[in-house]
Image 1 (spheres, chains in turn cyan, red):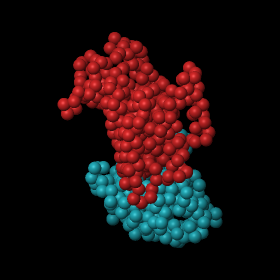
Image 2 (image 1 turned 90 degrees about the vertical axis):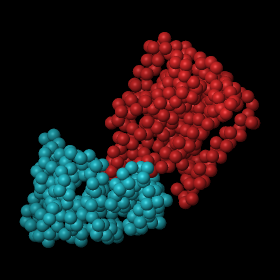
Image 3 (image 1 turned 30 degrees about the vertical axis):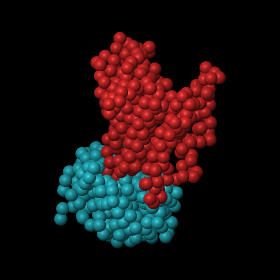
Image 4 (image 1 turned 120 degrees about the vertical axis):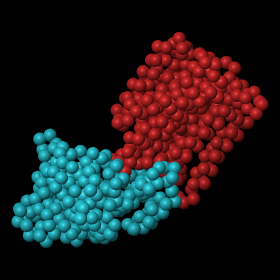
Length: 245
Length: 318
């Protein structure tokens, strides 16, 4: 099977620090992959290289068999890579509806090709369907900045979902959430997994167990282990650097 | 945004324009002339607001676009014998061309860098209008005579107050409706997204630099149209209008009325022009009064007048 996402020898150096060091990562279509590791392991840098926010010092990124190393972030989004930020990033002053509409109309443009052909009704329908799917339908006209924190995280997921992505990169989606909010978010991720491949950075091992089929562990810019959640927990090297065994 | 407000929004702005159209039959001659001038300047402020209010870019060089419209129209009429219509089109295109130049140079800049670069380019343009004074008349400028439009067999001199007022109204209405249309379109939504969070917008698939360039082009075009109309209606071209003061004015008008509101630029221009007019009856230091008015605004109504009304009472106001 051709992997959906593949990095080959991907490296990123910041001055004297090699934050990501020759990483080979393969994601098969349809899987939910967790990316774990201690703080400073290079997880956010790695997904930054995959989403195009950062340019690699060496190596390449392939998506659907195509080399996308030279593509800009917005071009990668157009190919189907969606990204949610570690720090919640929504348009606070715009309505919930408009937040999702910015993404939904970009999704529509992939087929419409230009603004003139954009079907506004279809965008509105997309927004309504997406908000219903994530459970924010009743808050459409509310300003995003006035939503509870947990709802803002869900809104950002809705925005990325409205792009209709093939690959979803979620950078610590449960960070700062309380117990029942985490549960709601996990339900949403499981739902998203039905239509997209997911790469999930996560610290909460219960969440990793719940969602991920495979786990990749990073430490000091390198991948040190990969396997099912059970195998990873039994791995002595992982226990030493991360799980505090 | 409440449901069904689309017609409400359009009705509000058409009502505002109808109010301006009706005012000409009630106003005494002095205020009649004053309002004609205010409408042209408000069209300029509307152009400025597309960039500041809806895209979040603060320019200190918009006089370059206004003056490009002015010189594009004035020079071609004065030296090449263009008619009013051809002169107007040349002015609008000049505003657009100046905006394209500035937009391409500033493509990668935002915030303070954008402010400084626009200021520098506009100063260069201002100095050029002085340097080429054999053509432009420098700071003395030059006067155009015999400007008129021929409409359906009627010869309408642009110096006649009723003609002046209604042409000014038409130009203002066109700029206002254009800005309303753009800001409420899907493209306007992307511009607001760029203003609110550029990085998020890039990662929703938009090449944000291109949208900033688009906003600069629209803003420059509207400013050029306003500059051209000013020259045609007041028969004058001069480098004063390329100076720094005419870059600061639209910023003040927009902030006073409310950046990011469609009617704000009109309200701001109206108030500020009258404040300046009344203050200059009492003192030559009228800019001091302008400054004081701004300090009061920033302390008690940072969102501007229309912005304050929207925040407090009418949330659906565009």
